[in-house]
Image (tube, rainbow, N blue to C red; front, side, top):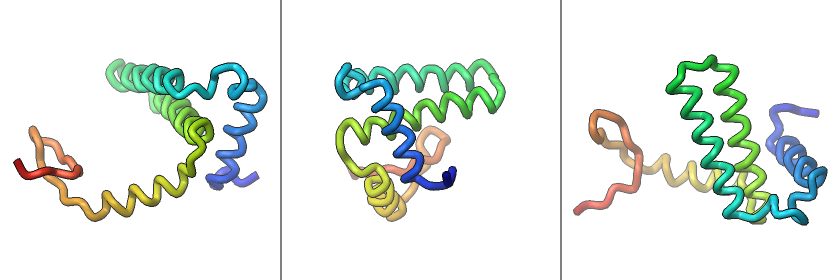
Length: 110
C-alpha cells in the first residue's frame, strides 16, 4: 500500500462503498451526499470556531475528503482529472483583495 497514491485512496473509498452497499442502499444518492458534505463542513467549522486541536480538525477534513472522493465515485467522474483541469484554470486567474482578504475568482467586470 502506498499512502501517497491517489489511486489507492480511491480504491479504499470504493471498498468502503462496496462494504456498505452504498449503491444499493441510497448512499450514493447525490442530494444525500451533498447533505453529508454540508454536515462535515459544519463539523470543520466547529473545530475552528471552538478552538479544537489540529488532530480533530484533520479528522473532520479527512471525512470531507472521503465524502468528496465518494461523490466522484457516485457521480462517475474522474476527480483526479477534474482537480488538475481546475488547477490549470485557477492558476491563470488574477487575485483581488475583497473586504481585506485575498480572492482568486473569475471576476466579471460590472
